[in-house]
Structure formats: structure tokens, C-alpha cells
Amino acid sequence: MCCDENRGMLHEYAAGKLSELESYAVARHLKSCDRCRRELAEIKALKVFLKSGFQESIIPSVDLKSSIMASVDLKRYKKSYRNTLGEMANLGMSLVAAGLILLLLNTVPKDDLVRVQNELYNTGENITQKISQPFSSINERIDKLTNSITQLDGIMGRIEREKEGGK
Amino acid sequence: MVSYIVKSKTELFSVIIDRYQSKVFSTAFHYTHDYEEARDLTQEIFIKLYNNLQKYKGKASFSTWLYRIAVNRCIDWARKKKPQTVSAICDGSEEELDIYDTIADSGGGPEEDLIKQENAVYLRKLVESLPEIYKTVIILYYFEDFSPQEISEITGVPKRTIDTRLFRGKNLLKLKMEELICGGEQNVLR
Image 1 (cartoon, chains in turn purple, orange):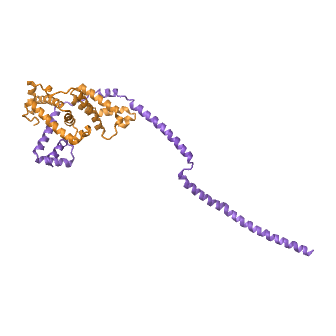
Image 2 (image 1 turned 30 degrees about the vertical axis):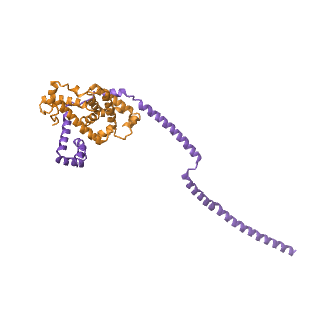
Image 3 (image 1 turned 60 degrees about the horizontal axis):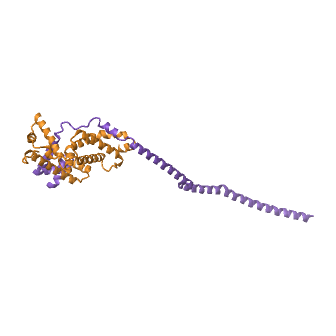
């Protein structure tokens, strides 16, 4: 690692903000580079020296918070949020109205179409079983009855003819 | 937290003040070197923060965004204020030169500590006299313990530039100190 590349990392290194790998690389370079070692020593010394002026840390006065809170408009976001809620309510109403219109236009939902088709098919089957089949059976019986009536009619005709022949 | 405040829980803003007021005040103090001015600046910064909470989109961390507002306000304040020159800090009187003469003396006694504190006050004034681009990085790095990467995010300046400014700022500071103390013959940081 060259000095220029390293020098850019010295402040980060002194602040302990480099990754483990980067720290290792810088530490390794420092072992063999007087210039960077001197640079790092200066950074650390300046930090200690500048901070030495702060034996007591700078602390804001206790009333600063209350002073700030008194200066801000606490209703600022309440107003805007209430407006937003009003707008959302209007939007909601519009959506409900649109939904109702769609419902009216499509009384049968798409998903139910398959169910309706199945029911229609089943109903057809039922109609065949419960109505068509019995009717065909009735038709057959009517046919038999018709034949029987025809036969009976023939018998009756013959009997009448025999009676006339006997007179 | 920010979304809660914006969604009408404005009282929660006091939690943000609790969390950040010390560091914001400290930053403001390093620009102003005046307790009342720093207090006013801090108050202005938090009011501006509160009024702009809806603009926070979460692209940077909240603290970075807050310190960006704080640093920009401090820089504005420093620009409006008449710059204090090094000659105004040290007029070359015997008494002040005596103080600087002892900077390199790192004795551990209470008297030496007191002298060292006084020297540091002069040093802070030297920082104040630096050009703005160096002053900001020096304050944020040496006093507020931000890393170069964090300073880059706060100021919106590339990290490589921050590294360069830190390096040049330190050398400029060292040069000014050496000039003030003994005409550039002594390295005061050792």
C-alpha cells in the first residue's frame, strides 16, 4: 500500500472506523513508514490537545428543550394530518361508489360463472332424469295403450259383424 | 419516530430534542464560542428541523440529515459574522506569547493543566480563524468525533475531498500555531 493511499485512511484509522482488514493493512504499512507514523501521531496529538480545553463538557441549559417546544407549532402536523384524513375519506367514498356501479354492471361475479355453468349442467341432467325419462316412459305406455285400444277396436268390430251375420 | 410526529404525534419531537440537543449545541458552540449565541443557533436549528420533518425521505440516516441542517445553519451564521483574524486573537503581547511558549510543555501538574486549558482556548480560536472549508471538517472531526465518511455524508462533499481537507486543515493549523509561538521553528504537536 502506498503512502498516498494510506494517508487518506489515517483519519478514519485514528477514529477507529476502518474495517478489520483495512486496519490491519494500515497498521502493517505504519510499521514501515515513518512519514505516515508521524502523520498519525500528529492527528492523535491534535485531537487530545483540542479536547483538553473541554475539562467540562459543553452542556446546553436545562430549559433549552422547553424553549424549543414552546417555539414550534405543535398543531402544524395535526392540521395537515386531519386534512389528509378528510381527503382519504372523500377518496374512500368515491371508491365505494365506483364499486357499487361495477357491482350493478356485473351482477354475476366472474368467479361465480363456472359455478353457475356447473349448476346449469347439473340442472340439465336433473331435467333429463326427472322429466324427460318419465315422459318417454309415459309415451311408451301411451303407445301400448293406443295399440291395445286399436286391438280392442278391431275385436269390437268383429263381434258386431258376427252379430249382424247371426241375425 | 419522524413518521409518528408527522402523523400528529407532535409531542414526540421532545424525544428528538433530548437525543440530539447536546451534540447540536456543542457543534454550534464550536462555531460561535459564545454560550448564548450557541443556544439561539441550536433553537433555530431544531425549529427548522421540526418545520421540515415532512421533507425527510429517509435517504440518509436521520442524524446525518439533522447534522446537515445544523452545519449549514452554523456555516451561514459564521459567514454573516465578521471573520475573526488570528491577529485579533493574539496581538503579540508578552503575556500571550508566554502562554504559547508553554504549549509544547506537557507537564502533568495542576498549574500545567490550567495553562494547557488556556492554550486550548487559543487553539480553538485559531480553528475559528481557518477558512470555512477547513474549519468545518476540523470541528466535526476533532471536536465532534465524526468519521471522515460521516462528515462526507453530512456536508455532501466526497470522502476523498474530506480526507484532503482534514490533512490540509491540520497542517494549516499546525503552521499557524508554529508561527504564533516561535516563528515556525517548533512542532507544537509533539
